[in-house]
Amino acid sequence: MEKTVNNNIDTTKWVDEYSDALFSYAYYRVNDRDLAMDFVQETFFSALKALDRFEQKSSVKTWLYSILKRKIIDHWRQQESRKTKPVSKYVTREDQDESWIEDVGARNSKPQVEEKIENEELGSALMDCIAGLPDKWKGIFIDKYIDEKDSEEICNEHEISSSNFWVIIHRAKNQLKGCMEGSWLNQ
Amino acid sequence: MGKSCEIAAKLMDKSDSEQLTLKEKLKLKVHNSYCKGCRKYNEFSKSFTDLFKKIKDNPPVLSTSEKEKLKDKLAE
Image (cartoon, rainbow over all chains, first blue to last red; front, side, top):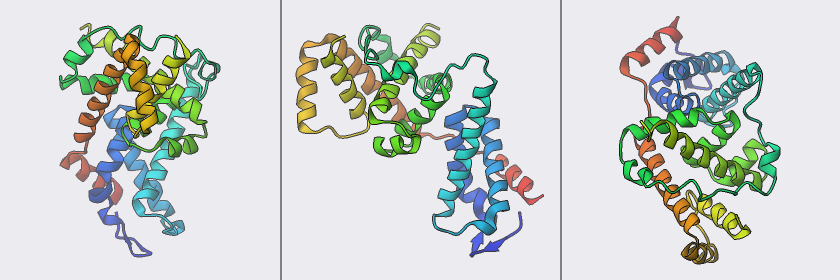
């Protein structure tokens, strides 16, 4: 990578300065190390190509994140379109009805969750389960729990109402709990 | 599941990352004092939030060799 000076941006430092942050962002969303690395690489390539058009209205880091985010969304869309029977929709009819909370406590009776929560394997089990969430839920969920964005920002970004946001969060949590109890705690 | 459980669950989910108002905290506390299902959900929710904190404390990073490989590819 040549040292390209456009608006005094030194691209030779990008890998050292931004690759870890971009990689973790991608990894949390695709749960595949090689794929996440490919996304980081493609992000840098795209940014280098578009560097002349970068007006520095935001920081380089923010700009790189926006490129990476678009790539991941495209990836999810492609995955979605390949599915013969979509398992996810942004906001389903079910999300909008009023019966979403039906079993809030009914499946939460196993004490194992609390007992095993300290196990370090749980982190990786959780990431596997997050990977199984419907793509749109995944993005919203990670924005909230990993990136700690506030709910209003997430709603604006994903163009959903506050009500739908909490429905998605709640359903995602219940799905993750079911996944972890089923696939990990029973091992 | 009643409407009050629905409200309580939303408050518990909200409290994962946001500060509840005093009124919301009281509402939740009163509800959970008599609702076993929601108390269980609250325990799960807290464990869940703690787990995410742990994950975030150890984010996945690229190894030195992976970074060098990336630099080489970008230099091509």
